[in-house]
Image (cartoon, rainbow, N blue to C red):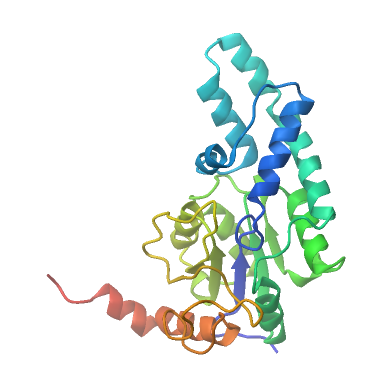
Amino acid sequence: MEINTGIQALIFDIDGTMADTEEAHRLAFNLAFERFRLDWTWGPSEYRELLKVHGGKERLTHYIDSLVDDDDERARLLESVPRIHAEKTRFYSAFVRDGAVPLRPGVARLLDEARGAGRRLAIASTTTAVNVDALLQATLGPRALDMFDAIACGDQAAAKKPAPDIYQLALHRLGVPPQHAIAFEDSVYGLRAAQAAGLWTVVTPNFWTVGGDFDGADLLLPSLGDPAHPLPNEPGNELESAAWLTFDEVTRRAEEQTAPESVAGRASGPLH
């Protein structure tokens, strides 16, 4: 049955949100550096800082620009960025195929609940299509791509997060207005992108993003949780119905806060 009112779709970021992929990405970058005989090693702390630059090729470009003073050497390295990144993607895909990157708690459960309720699912990620395909098929099975009604990723949008372009593209492909969708993110830039696109947003930080300025997130949780991994102090702290975020609760809360009268009330609140 077609859903014409209320929440019609859930839109997920991939890296860090659906799965804690960043350690695998970091190791894959380092292996690619070895393959190209580059004397670079990105440790966890350094990589956490580099994650402030969204997009793998953009991250490499930023690193080279900050590291190399010689113009000719910098130009040579910048020209090799696509090849380095392609090699890194091959290493990362191998990690994922080997099962080294599981989904975060509650992700598969919430996807199943949404599909069971007849809602649409989408991906909005700055990672490549190859990475998206590898992760979804390794974690959700060979027909995983069929679960999603729209996938927006990689270089399909003009600007990376925190620009709203990738979410606007996902919404366009879904045919759903922003007030009828929920975004799931893990990073500050992802939150800003979803907010700029007009989406009600759930944020679940991880090691790489915890401590960021998540003011404005509609719901902030350590993970989505599930019966095997209940969230501490829930229900009763952030959640009302269970110690994990259920589809019914997240859609109800989003619908209450995005209803026209609710939006108008918040916009025209008391003057100080």
